[in-house]
Length: 411
Ligand SMILES: Cc1cc2nc3c(=O)[nH]c(=O)nc-3n(C[C@H](O)[C@H](O)[C@H](O)COP(=O)(O)OP(=O)(O)OC[C@H]3O[C@@H](n4cnc5c(N)ncnc54)[C@H](O)[C@@H]3O)c2cc1C
Image (cartoon, rainbow, N blue to C red; front, side, top):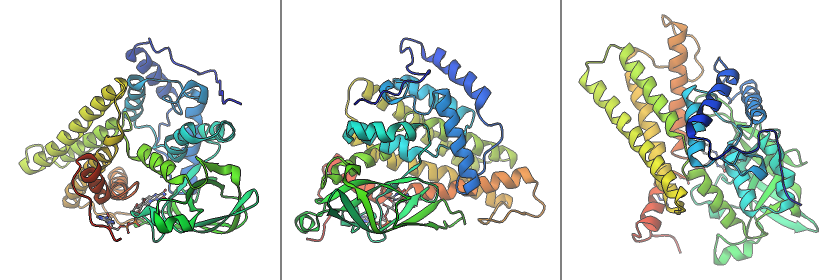
């Protein structure tokens, strides 16, 4: 059986110049992208709006332009993929909510899934009919992921799962979770990365309980997921029983690696910051300009690096060693942009609490901009944690990229 998701949009003529494709995308976005900002995806209503937008993207043939044609993508090379992203961010189209499926599980299934699994899950995932979330972290296992203790015990052609996952992004809105579970605790006594399995679980299965988690800004887009005697078919294992660690590392590689074109998003943020400097009449203020200049240089360095990596990849180079460097750089740069804006806003009086809507004496447009900036500041802080914290990325870079001595670990 082969997955062949032919749509009327299949394929891009790779000989078409970047400019031709860019204008096709530009035209489509002008006709289809929402004119008004959607509600934040962290509420049910906002999430549904974002999901509907993802479905529009799919219908237009733009859900995953870089995916191979046989899986329903457009087979775009990196130049075209970047052109799409640059156009997308140029019009400030909505934040994507289908990342767990499109950026993580989809590529994992292409690498490790069986033909049956690809045929079963990829079409709905691509069309955003099914939302997937990532069940790796547990209350006692974050940075030290291999210490996870959610158990899956074989019972005939099922596994019986018991345990808890936490910090599950979009958990409250998702349909399925791809989880790491411990299937061989004995093996873990010798090497804790052993005996782990990558298992896909339908969140509607009896025994699954999803509890929303409130974030520091009051929103509830995250969840804890509890499993009590949850029966999951063995055929939902991806990459082999007890072979989950390599699948997990591959998933994290996709999460940390270069997202070609996202530099355009950060350039937009710096442009918004410049607008704030202007609005405050600080064009001649050397301190404000110094801060603005710093983040502008950071985003330009990042852009140049994304182009460098794209050239390296097109030439067949291996990007494995660049994932942690990339994640560390963009997350700290993003934090710098939003922290700088917050300092400027604080001086302007723009200190907004999580859910305070009314700001006496402030016009609604400014209040909305402040609120949005605060929301994104907190998200930028979270980005330095999810997918592996900055400290963990530094450890990986020092040990695996630079070859420095390993950090001391308990024996
Ligand atoms: C917004 C958000 C979304 C998330 N989404 C998901 C999701 O969808 N799915 C999922 O599975 N997980 C998710 N996570 C969880 C995330 O992956 C973990 O929070 C992260 O791996 C850190 O684990 P921890 O919170 O247990 O912190 P800990 O591992 O307890 O770390 C605490 C502190 O100690 C530091 N530290 C730990 N070990 C070392 C070391 N060896 N050397 C130096 N410093 C160290 C860390 O850097 C950190 O500062 C999300 C987290 C956030 C904040």
